[in-house]
Length: 433
Image: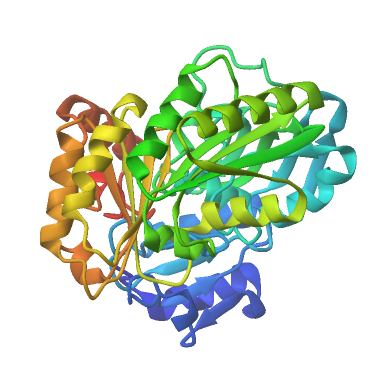
């Protein structure tokens, strides 16, 4: 809570300049209906640290804000608060094309990053929803991965260096600008997926990958998702190394892709000979299962995977992520089908054991959510209610089933060490951290 907002705003204006502080017209930065009292736009790491120091002194909670594409992830914030916008931290620091690394301000969007590195035949494979507008810092802090996670790695694999401002304003650096540079604890990992509760990321060094020579997708369509899940298992158990394996399991999800049947999408990338082998084998296996298959490439392929990436988030509504061991996906989904309302849709990222559910708020109740959580818990899985009406979020922690007690104890200790007075996103993370 902002204990002394009347004196905090002038102090922030003195620090940043009046044009970078907004008071009274901040509804555009509301989160779950909670409107910040003040919005600030610091211009560099030092200013971020100074803002956090002033907010700590005023007992003001701070909600870091990147591109806003996944700002709803987390428990509702405590009103009122200060929205700390990172859009001015958007510069390119260094692109070391020879070593496949890039260092950028945390406020750079992934779309802008792609514009910088694509000319060198490189790409950053983290694919959060609406990646073009998501910022590097926000994508890392929220840690939502895309279809190619199992093949290309998650944020934990792709972030090799970071600068951050801690709650007391102290600026810290972790990792470096080469892949093999860490002796001792890799402190970067603490910030990945921490939802900005341990510090505000101001700069990131990222590992890049070469753009593959060839990319094609085999799309297999059928009426029974069980057939497609079995075929996806055959693909994953084979010697093939697909970049992504996704099952579109119902009519609602298929409709979002402009289709009227369930589908299995297998993306093959790399050298032409390897891609051709994967396309040939998957097409043959589909024929053996009496399923229709087509091969997509170019713009049609890109549009399809963008729709898959954004599926649960597009068009409003509820977005839920269920994560289970990949081998349990068919069994879990079989049980979810009976628990989900008919208006819900689901997409299965088979290789990573991730199921994204999109639901209509009018037909999705706390009872349905409880059933999803119970099914997931039976397979040692986890559920994240990534986006939902506030009333549904309030029915329990948005991360559930809960973190094991020992892990949660460690997390509480780390939060206490990094943010003892609870300045950064208080209450929004797991178990109210």
